[in-house]
Amino acid sequence: AERVFSGVQPTGNLHLGNYLGAIKRFVSLQDSYECIYCVVDMHAITVWQDPAELKRHTREVTAAFIACGIDPKRHIVFNQSQVSGHAELAWIFNCVARMGWMNRMTQFKEKAGKDRENVSLGLFAYPSLMAADILLYRATHVPVGEDQKQHLELTRDIAQKFNVDFGPSIVANGHNDTFFPMTEPLIAGPATRVMSLRDGAKKMSKSDASDNSRINLTDDADTIAAKIRKAKTDPEPLPSEEEGLKARPEADNLVGIYAALNDTTKQAVLGEYGGGQFSTFKMALVDLAVAKLGPIGEEMQRLMGDVSAIDAILSEGADRARVIADKTIRDVKDIVGMVRG
Ligand code: ATP
Ligand code: MG
Image (cartoon, rainbow, N blue to C red; front, side, top):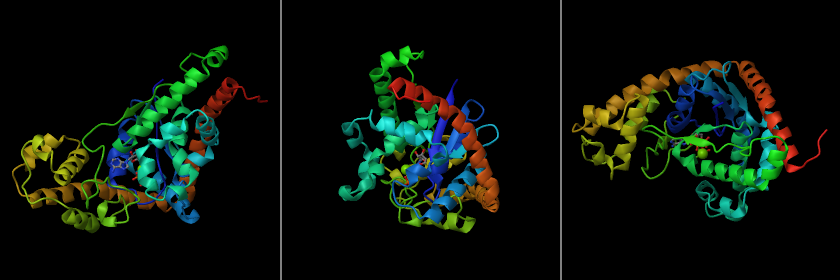
């Protein structure tokens, strides 16, 4: 069976990049795959989170999933910490993954910055927990933004090494010799890496200090309009061909956002706005962004009004996730040689 897994951290400030690179794609996969969408609170605490805020943000990501169109009845929506298998498998993967592999992870380097001695051990091990999230469900496909590509490659390396290291035991326990699948990333479309509105060289991020760098899913129409009007651009008019966006990261970013929001291509957008003034295009982008994001923000607000309903969705999703996860954990323990009752 083809199974999709993906996650979003409850670290606040859900933004347009999370929507276009991840959540919008989660929605579109629901007809073709069995989907498991997780609010990854254990990943969030690799950087200190205020406890009350962590709860609020966990419910907010859940509300965003549902407001965007994920159906928690047909698919599984839950928060990571409610299924203990994530932590259990992550420990085993910590013993499979190599220090050298982890040392090459660019997200760790970026997030740790200069003060490497003082970041959590969890931040370093993050990719190992992510591999556990995916492989606990033996997911075959993972929709993510471009920034997660390297972590997906590491997930395959871990799966491969586990399959080889325990090969004879895997077969002796009655499994096919590729116990963990080689998971495929699903990274496609015109907005796999949405950039900051203030700096075309940095990705749009929840953790960016400047609120003007991103469009939040909960921003109202006036805020969206102001942020797009202020977005950094260059003085040239838009080109008519996609080629012409190459050395213009800010223009490329805004055209990509328009294309993704409108389910079309960058070339089609340039066909309509190429050669014209940037300000005309920005006005059209404001209208489009407000039309697409406005209803999502409002629905999130409405859902957030009933915390117990959100918590019930997460707990019911966790119950269903646990059925799959517990089976994997039992199999893995047998394969590794851990005695169990
Ligand atoms: P943080 O700064 O806390 O890491 P984040 O914005 O990177 O926050 P995550 O929860 O780490 O958000 O990522 C959730 C999903 O959103 C992932 O699939 C990730 O690839 C995707 N994503 C994050 N930022 C972008 C972006 N700028 N463009 C496209 N996809 C993105
Ligand atoms: Mg991130």
